[in-house]
Length: 329
Ligand code: UVW
Image 1 (tube, protein in one colour):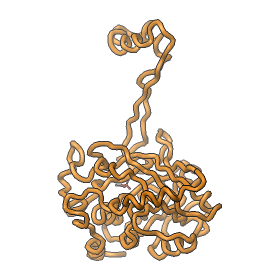
Image 2 (tube, rainbow, N blue to C red; image 1 turned 90 degrees about the vertical axis):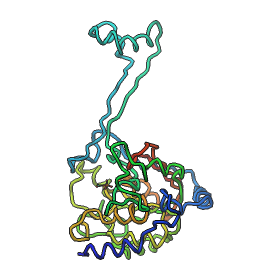
Image 3 (spheres, rainbow, N blue to C red; image 1 turned 90 degrees about the horizontal axis):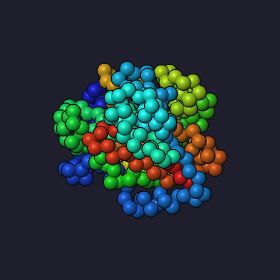
Image 4 (tube, helix red, strand yellow; image 1 turned 45 degrees about the horizontal axis):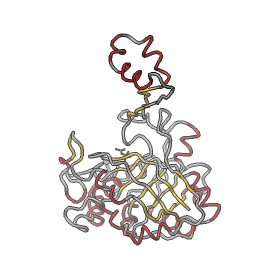
């Protein structure tokens, strides 16, 4: 088990603060240049599209922790309600929303349905913004942690990165196939930097500047099968942050709930890789990405690179965003 001193040493090594200027809030997305975007678009050869987002609904993966819950979806207008509103609704309803909706529907056959969703932005397929985690009271690039307030993140919010797209070359590293696992990687065997090299070599793919790396652990496939996300699992060892730093990767995403291994690896801490990636490197993490269909296709044609299109929602001041990323081959 590493110490907090070891962690701080690695933090000093991988820190990108000031690399793109004192005001930078994009972090490693700066590695995605127009040339990189054009190169990624050139990887589209067959028009095969793989949506990587999971369902947003009540059967989602939340529940293992009390501080997050699954999305709650509610209908706010239902065209079929018109009779109830006009004929049976209580007076207060007829005088307010009922009258308004009945007005839209009066004397014509046209109807509409509306709905809303209430959810933690971290509930399902998501990007963590650079303001999601911090230590020593500092966010990425030295911005004060206190700039994340009850009004939202004034620095490093997800809205600050939307100008990048986000689109680049995606590279899938399939750990399930590499380890010869059935569906997923059970707990207790964190993925090491050396293993990432082995997988890339075996798949015949190189990881480089501006790439977005997708790591398949099988967690999502197992969750879909069992409907329970509380089983021990394996993710990236915290030292993989250095591997990503050395290759100048733009972002990393996985099919599990926190990319990194749930066993910290740094004494007395939680989420050390989050701290190194988001806070020190300025590298965003994607979680709960469904990589099953993409992995099957990559295994079939032996091509593990593709165009990845993964724009977050522009939720002002948010520390993360849901999305439906798309890989195109
Ligand atoms: C936490 O677990 C706090 O964050 P994440 O959703 O990024 O894993």
